[in-house]
Length: 265
Image 1 (cartoon, one colour):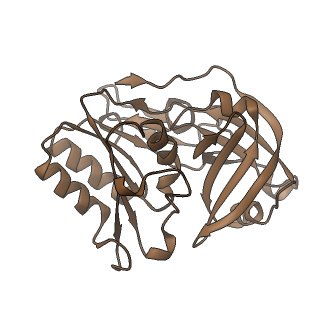
Image 2 (tube, rainbow, N blue to C red):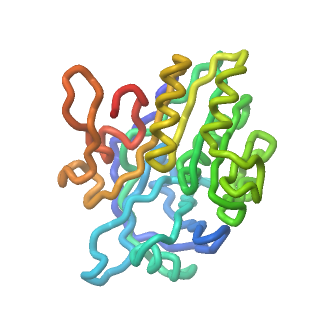
């Protein structure tokens, strides 16, 4: 696999919000202007955003880089789940926020003989949009799972070909009524090409994906979502257990957020 460039540059700057709008149930699309971050960001990386200048929400929040547009626009796709993201969703165009990034290790791009299979649950679509746009010139499959149709991301608006995407919803309101991992299992059972899996989503989904790729001996990378306080490895607050012979832990912010599925528990 070809490895995405990991820049040594870490940029901390005040940026202008260009748009910040609701695109699905509790899901928002935010665009900010930063030529510097846009030039350095790679699929799978993230930024740390300070959502408010007040002491109550002083710590920054991590958000995957969803896409880069043109030479100076960075896109974030996020879900409103608490006070911090609630504040962020209320900030309108023209306002400024402070952003640190790009951070972390991104995806290793698949070799030309492999069929990329993207598997996401809920807001796990965010880092995959950037990857999908990077590999758009080649065949790939995207299996996207949601609880219900109202949560579905606007894929065409995000620049992802909808013909590549299969939707699974738990209530059957869109696509196939099943868990997204059932779509993955069916694909792996009948695949005639060598697949490589890229996944991001809830822990239960990722656990099932890990079992399936191990059963089928398929290479797999996973993007881990974790709460972070610093984003640069100093606080040790975002560790995950390693499955390597030496054991120990890995920091999501600097050793990830993208890992080989077989390297973590």
